[in-house]
Amino acid sequence: MHRTRIKICGLTREEDVRAAVNAGADAIGFVFYPPSPRFVPFERAAQLARLIPPFVTTVGLFVEPGRNFVETALQSVPLQVLQFHGDETEADCLGFGLPYIKAARMRQGLDLLKYAASFPGAQGLLLDAFVEGYGGGGETFDWSLIPDRLPMPLILSGGLNAANVGEAVRRVQPWAVDVSSGVESAKGIKDAALITDFVAGVEHAHG
Ligand SMILES: O=C(O)c1ccccc1NCC(=O)[C@H](O)[C@H](O)COP(=O)(O)O
Image (cartoon, rainbow, N blue to C red; front, top):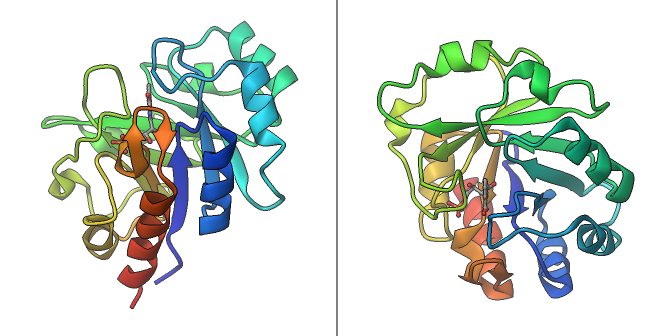
């Protein structure tokens, strides 16, 4: 099995970026959705991004942004991947000169293969629990809803933590896992020990 990549999302503080990088995170996500308690203004995200070394990917997360909003983010923050969480179409996600990840809010009745087919340009599909407020809700979803084969890399998220991520990796075998609440002491405040435990949980899943 390949090494499962790890994305830590919703960072707002320098010490949390350092903790994530030191623990071995492959990607750091900044939430650019103003209603979120994890929202970071672009200038702040730019400061935090300076702490991210080469080969750790900087991801900007959006929910149905206007094109100007994304373009302004890109002028300020050195993002490498865009992540869209709302009801965007493929056309809304393209044309920024960066790869994008599309989130699917998992629930009974969602035809995930059809959904994935409507985002042929996506670099990956992030499967998250269907929660009020779009994401970062700390809730798992029924992993048996995930089809055996998806046409693009799968990023598993939604309610992951150090206690369940090992089982998630073994059962789902995603390309990557994404966590926010499970490594927090409060919304937007990460906990270095929880991050370390989470990364260890992924690594132990590989035996
Ligand atoms: O984190 C947020 O506040 C957020 C707001 C709006 C859309 C998405 C959001 N987070 C998305 C993420 O990437 C989370 O890491 C993912 O939903 C998993 O969250 P959690 O269940 O808390 O681990």
